[in-house]
Image (tube, rainbow, N blue to C red; front, top):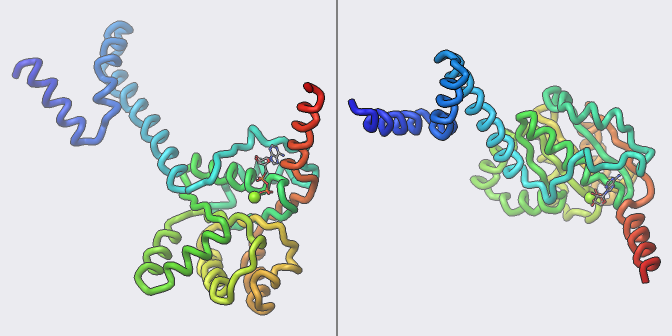
Length: 257
Ligand code: ADP
Ligand code: MG
């Protein structure tokens, strides 16, 4: 076999084995190893390390895309000093994602603009990086999806998809009251999730006002019972960051002119 034929075959085999990084990097790594007088196992080790790193990176990228975050926010850009009610230590611990393997829940409660969506997204991203599957919904979009999937087959498909996720984020619970059907579907959704996988929910509503969006007191009680059984609560009441930022910007503009 000529060297040319061997190269063609190697390229074919590496593709068939799904080792794209081997294929892309082997010549370069071979040259480096020859220069450094490394042996063959060193050469293989280096290539497999590169392949693993790339696979890991692609996996994170895929999980982030599938999670459907509306924006990508991380904890590095979060100013904890702006919200003294929030327990930073707890947030950092949650970012290690042990709560997901324990199937525990997280509730972030506080008024508008205090960073609840930011924190939920940042924790969701951390989970994607740790290898967990995440799905982000706004409460309204989740209810719409459930309503649309109400008939048999679509609902089964949706349930299966959800069951595969390790963490479900439900953002903005409480802004809009649900219809009776919507509330029932949402209740069923949480009931099914109970102890099977983690839920992270953000809300502007204190518990005693949940009945107003869910309609029935009995259903609200049962929902709270499940959600708060194994829960970490993030207290996020404070001054709106959004509002503060816009005041700050307006102040700057005022000074310039
Ligand atoms: P909420 O969901 O509680 O209404 P958001 O998370 O949407 O609030 O926050 C509103 C905006 O302010 C977002 O752009 C968010 O990134 C930013 N923000 C809020 N709190 C902080 C904070 N403590 N540090 C940095 N940015 C923040
Ligand atoms: Mg929000």
